[in-house]
Image (tube, rainbow, N blue to C red; front, side, top):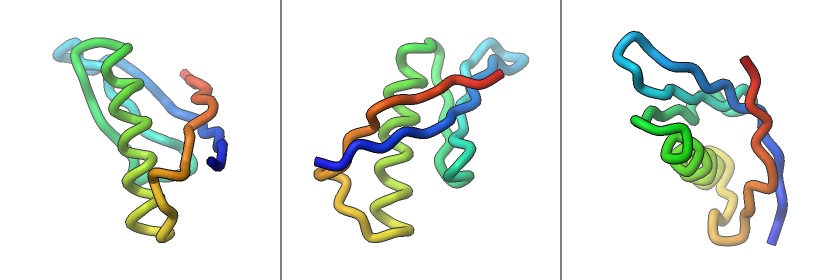
Length: 70
């Protein structure tokens, strides 16, 4: 399994939702009502973007760390 690290920006929008996007993969973005849920979803989005755009096997990827930037 391949470990990868990514930088993710998480903020709250006007409606109170957490919005996340990956700085290294601009197509990886999501939103959720809780911080825990948005982190789970951004990991899923990162896996999907890598699988679709780079042909990487998502089953062999592990998002090792997400650094939250302001």
